[in-house]
Length: 82
Image (cartoon, rainbow, N blue to C red; front, side):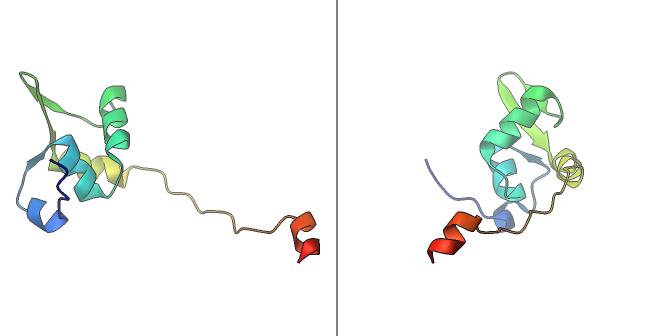
């Protein structure tokens, strides 16, 4: 099942799967999994099932460091050939 999840469909849920957390946050599933593995994103375990509390996801996303990309400048050797 490779269904695309809409944040609107997840609006009512208090706990989320990894796939749902990725869809809601707009971040890659691999990044969510990595954060769970390193403990920076909390998880709830019930048997083999993993759930992420929505409030924990929101707090984790809010704490992510933001960066500003450097503007692209064309290398001099490429500028000369145009």
